[in-house]
Every structure is written in C-alpha cells, then in structure tokens.
Image (cartoon, rainbow, N blue to C red; front, side):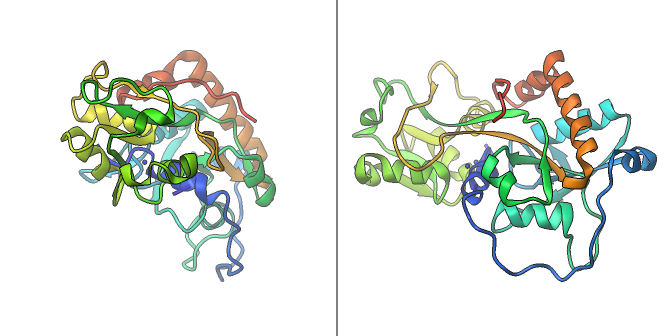
Length: 296
C-alpha cells in the first residue's frame, strides 16, 4: 500500500493499498530466473534479501548505509541461518504484485540475480492467492493506522468526532489520508493538511503547524522519537473508523513458491527472534513498540 522523521510507514501504507490493485497485464521480458531452495542458499553461504528503500523506520539508506527495523531483522535472520547477508535496497513499484514479480520470481531485463527473500510484504490472504508464484513466511510485525495529538491543543482524542476543529497533518494518497477523507461521509476533509510524504507531515506536526498527525503507529512513534517529542505530551491513539480502508495488517516475508523450505527456515528464525525478545529490542531501537502478530 503506498497499507509512512523519515517516512515511517510510507511503503507500509502504500503496500497495503497496492495489495488491492490488480497487477497490469504487461510482464517483463527477462528470461526465466531460478529460485534457490534452502539447500542451495545454504551451499552458497549467502542469503539475498530485498528491502524497500525510503521506508523508515523499517528500511532506508542514510549516509550511504542501510538502517531500520527490516535491515536489522534481515541481519538477524541471516545470522540465525548461519549465512552472510546480501542486502538489496529496491524501489517500490506500482503494486506489490509487481514488486514480488521483479524481485522474487521473474526478474528484471538485465537478468539480475533474484532475491531469496523479500521483507515488508503484507501478510494478506488475497495477495497470496493472487500470486501463486510466491509463498509467505511467518509474519513479524503488526501494523496499525493511528493518530498522534498534542496535549494542550486537543483535549482528548477517543473518537473520530474529536478531530473536529483541529488540523491534521497527513501524507497525501496514503492509507491514513483515504481513511480520514472517507470518515463520516467526508466531514473532516477540510481539516486535512496534505504533504508530499510522511516526513513532511511529521515535521509540520512537530513544528506545531497542526494539532494532529496521522500515519501508521510505527511511523508516528519513530517520528516522535527522532524529533525529541515527549510521548506523554503527544499520545498515540487508534480510533475505529468504519469504511473500506484496513486499519490493521501484518507484515511478513515472501519467497518463491518452490522455495518453501526456505520460508519455513525463515519462519523458524522469526519465531526464535520473537521469543528471545530480539525483535522487540530491534523495534525499540527506533522508538517503535512491538506486538507479536497472530497471522491470518
């Protein structure tokens, strides 16, 4: 869904929205690329992992180096499997289906080696059904749409009606934007202040230009941490809003369908990292709270 201070969950939101899109009919003309089952990955000694760029706090390049929750998780998974990590930072395409095709099973026109694993994939039953060439791993993160508000400007924020009379900073065309635009028949449209990306929306909120910030909980929490904002003075809340937009989804990994043994091994690694508290610690490094997902 494109279902993000740097755009915390921009790719998360975009990815969620993009899972609803039917992929275009055009396919890349690259020759057939081969998946690598677990034994071949282990024999090579290297795990190739694709992550989205410009997707803080999950994955981004800063100072020429990758950082974020997904980056640290990829390293931890490779470590659990006893492998070196070959990290690929990739751009988000028009829809998740195309991203999976390009990075996991079809490849690009140049014939670049495919990734063995892609992280930050919505753990969505319809997505899995629509893309029979891929297989989803155990999910690792529970993502939610949320709102932050500044105490002193907003008395309380428990229901959508409490937005009335306050400005909301939101990334344009994001899941949060669509959710708020549709709320109560468009009643709060005039309250929305749209920004090119979540970074800009977060900066506007932190500068006091709006009383409310909309985005994913992970994105908002990371932005508040990065901006030095007090969590007590800037509570993060989740409000039920009837409508077509999913307010909660889980993130996981994906492999090519004939590499299911690799998916099971990655799933075991994720389960172990969760049980050990390492995944929670990774999230906390970026100011993000962690709740283990349940899976569909």
